[in-house]
Amino acid sequence: MKRYLMYKSIMKYLTDKDLSLNAKGFLSMILFNDEINALDLSKYCSDDIETIKGTMLELRIMKYVKYDPETNMLIAGPKKYDEWDESILEDIHNKANKDKEGR
Image (tube, rainbow, N blue to C red; front, top):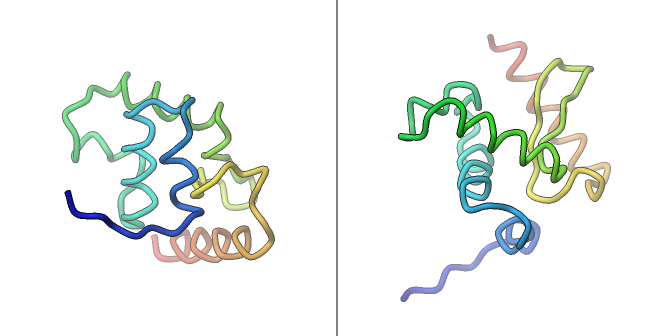
């Protein structure tokens, strides 16, 4: 099997034993494809909407996805949001504001 190098911060959620495989796959899709809206994810997978909602709830409970009242959007990161530093938060807000303006 071929080995792939990944940033340690990205591997953090991949090695989280408390996350289900669905949650890890869902978060990977969101983090690696900025253009995918989490609510439109059903177009890209065979799971039903209830499974997608359950997975999103799991990610919110485990603190990988957070509601940002400033941008009125859900934001996701490569590690739990209570571990985000200022540079990650600034980058996420910049992307969220750019997406919001582009709509």
